[in-house]
Image 1 (cartoon, helix red, strand yellow):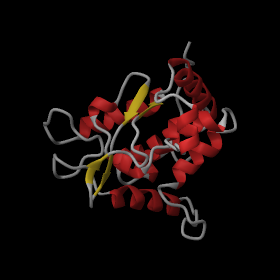
Image 2 (image 1 turned 90 degrees about the vertical axis):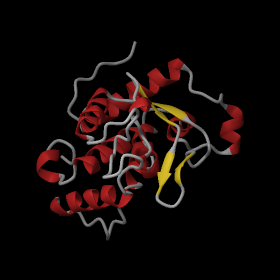
Image 3 (image 1 turned 90 degrees about the horizontal axis):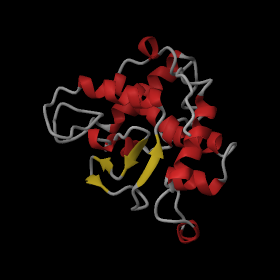
Image 4 (image 1 turned 60 degrees about the vertical axis):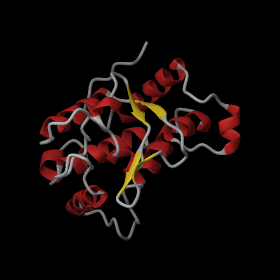
Length: 198
């Protein structure tokens, strides 16, 4: 319900799309903020930066870039939001602000989520729900279909032991397997026709 009726529930489209992206990819808030047009592929999204007001654009938390499967509905929502971007720059931020050289403040994404949860009667304070909760949601749902190691790789949870055990990048087969599993997890939550990778 949180995503089906977004036009009525979500005041800020950027907050809606960021929550959708995080729920379906496990991206951190700063990683969502850092997404630019060039990061959006046909079937994957490249998470190679994070953004904070203090540090600006920087590497993701663990220092490693990663390609994450991108559901068609989420890709369409990202590209649709890009159409709203008022700045005519070469590689714009998806989650734009009034300034072309930085994304919207992360508080806008959190506030949008909290207001929507409030409209639904969900006690986000009592339940300690934050934007980061989408990351936990993604990981808990995905590990019902995949091994923890595969989920850790796409979500960017790289401990030293996992990093040594697995390759620096996700193999094409793993991206497809994760994409198919994510499609199964979200097919009853996000309205899009499920087309599994071959």
